[in-house]
Image 1 (cartoon, rainbow, N blue to C red):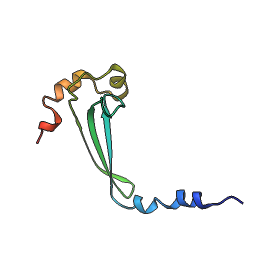
Image 2: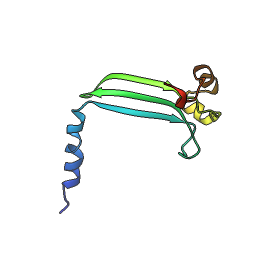
Image 3: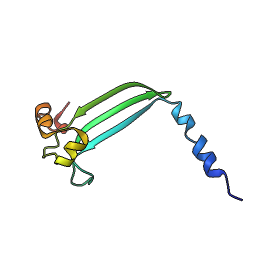
Image 4: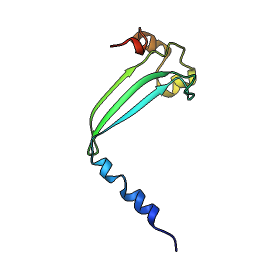
Length: 93
């Protein structure tokens, strides 16, 4: 006889978490390698009881060219990055 434990865990374990206010963090980067690629955008979405209650995002200048494949995927171009960002993220207050 198969155990039903996994389906019970999947169906009920996370429900109390969804009743709490949450903030989801989204990072866009120049690639997938954490040692070599850089962040290009930070986005936050605030959710309360399953409803979106706030959001915030900003572009970050990675101080390097954004590869064409990443530009196509994210819509963040080198031109957009250059117009919006003049300083490194670490220099911002």
